[in-house]
Length: 476
Image (tube, rainbow, N blue to C red; front, side, top):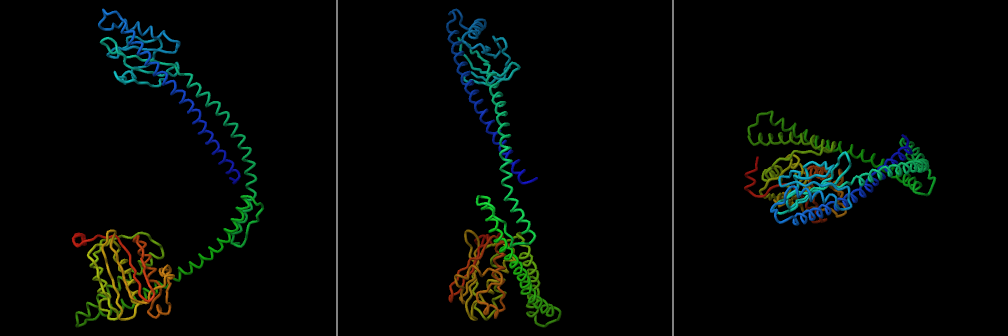
């Protein structure tokens, strides 16, 4: 279907819906107002009839201590004939709600009468084969008796007026739709001309002619649309170039990332396998070799796991409860024997919720970065604090620091503040980028504070629990 036809059809549909709903609301509002007015009048009239019935009952001769049924019938018949309203029908029922008198044509059942009590009034709209009626009911008090007065008032004219209103509005709406169709057909034809020009320009750009621009044929809104389209085409051309550059960078990142992890891991695993394959006299050598081997296998698996995260952007992990003490022991085992830097570990008792291998990778990378930024013999502080909103990890060094204008860039892959210094320490600019990606999966982020010449503090918060009792209770 052509755009002009879609525009015409959608406009007619919207116009028809608007006219239909507004017409229904208008006619129905007038109908409900009239009906509510008739209901109020019927209830007032019913109250007046009840008062008149009670007054007539009080005027019966004193010899009757209880109002006879025959007298009640006479009063009801008199009330039916009184007044100018000939469409009124009444019915009188006794204490057991059995009819004593009913006007000719009173066709209502006893449903409303069952809802009417001594202190309550009731009404309903009743439809019969003779039309629509307002059916009211109330209790009247007579000497030593409670009787029930029902009245039916004909309101068929109100419903007929509603049907007439709907019929008239349908005819008016049809005329308006026909006129609207003619006008919108003309407007749609005018609109499609500049749009066809844009369509041709789009096709040429889809064919790879990103430098092609549409001709502006007017200076109105559609002409502005053409100008905006041309500006969009320029931005699109720039964006495509950026995407191509980012794709190249992504491929470079994946290759460098795999190389940085897999190459040293292969050497570690091979060396550990040699140690495990020979019988050595010293048990400590075996334990150390076994640690290197098992840790190498873990890092190998981690490299593929992280590579999968970076490439596929998989947004699902399986957090587990991890004691902070176990993380402290792990890090001290990794860095505690290193004599080049002074490592200070200070972890409060607590539980964190994370994927263990990924969390260890974050902490190891942060410590490794702190070492690269510090001179040998410098102090590096690794702390863990249990807070109300989780467990905070932080790594503090007293190295070269990072300029403020560089802070927002250091989590980008391959970005290095001091490239010569980083490369001399076998850096590749991947550590913080990897940490940021892992923390994103844990709904956390790096918090970086740094002063050039004084050092850097990098931390993050993970969900956790405080206290030694909780630690003992939740440790797996």
